[in-house]
Amino acid sequence: MMPAIETTPRRQAPQPMDIPTLRDQRTAVAAPITVDELVVNWHVTEACNYRCGYCYAAWQREDGRRDVVRDEQATRELVSALWAGFHPGNTANALSRTLRWSHVRLSIAGGEPMLYPQQVLDIARQARELGMRVSLITNGSRLPEGEALEALARQLDVLGLSLDSFSTAHNLRIGRADSRDRTLSLADMATRLRRARAANPRLQVKINTVVSAVNAGEDLVRALDLLRPDRWKVLRMLPVVNSNLAVDDEAFASFVARHAGRVAGMSVEDNTDMLGSYVMVDPQGRFFQNGTGTQGSYFYSQPITRDTVHRAFASVPFLAERFAARYRPMATAHGNVAGTA
Ligand code: SF4
Image 1 (cartoon, protein in one colour):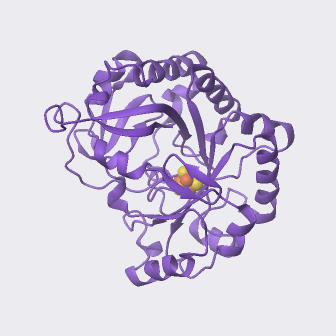
Image 2: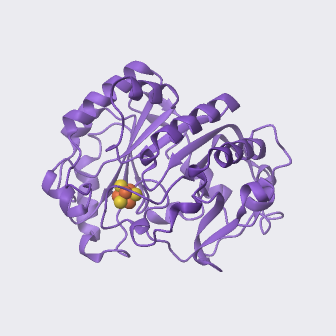
């Protein structure tokens, strides 16, 4: 799900950047910035059942055999390590010199995390038992039905859906379709959201839409009215992976203007806002950050469970100010929420 994120930070192509690590920032920040929650995005897999033309993961997909999510014990150890390192009371964390938070939210992302439905449920349960909030970022196609959906919804604070269009033709052109060319149905998604909300009335629904040349002319207001997201984030597709889908300035501005004031909880995220502003863990359990690192287009830490969380996190770039700006409180359709992402 990212930038082009689908939603989350990983999906779009990486951008060159020059941002400091926490080690570099030791003397640069005078007083810690306070936020409500620290969001840790764990991309549990690069694999996905869709093939979006703008998806960076689709052309740099690694062999998933070493993915932590495939190993139950390693999964539990990683979730425990993240809580031990980031829980708000741990002032030994180097990040606490620049940022203070009251809650930790583990955001389970991909690829498509619901390719591992039981593992996602287990991760969410463990994270909640430890004291974390939990969000799931998904393309929606593998959301379960019935009691399984209710069980999942009860473990979540935020359900994030990456939805670009409800036109079958457009979804096929973007690549938002599975191997049998099945696309998401608006009516089906509305039904599932109703059931998920009934099971967990405090569940917040976030929708992320990547605007490309294919969907830039659409009006999504009626569809969004039906789904009633608490937040709707609009992202612009980056033309690095597939310039055929690139949207020009005028078409993007027109899309934003067409929806502005008509959809509650709408926010527009510029791609540059995202650089260095996410805490991200890759499928192999390493912190990573966009940039021009020694291992290609990303900076990677050592595996978190083989190092201390503090030392591993301090080795990748991160900008606390940019994180705080992205997660600032904002009014939404159904009350105030902790942040924009
Ligand atoms: S739905 Fe799948 S293919 Fe599309 S952007 Fe997300 S991870 Fe990539």
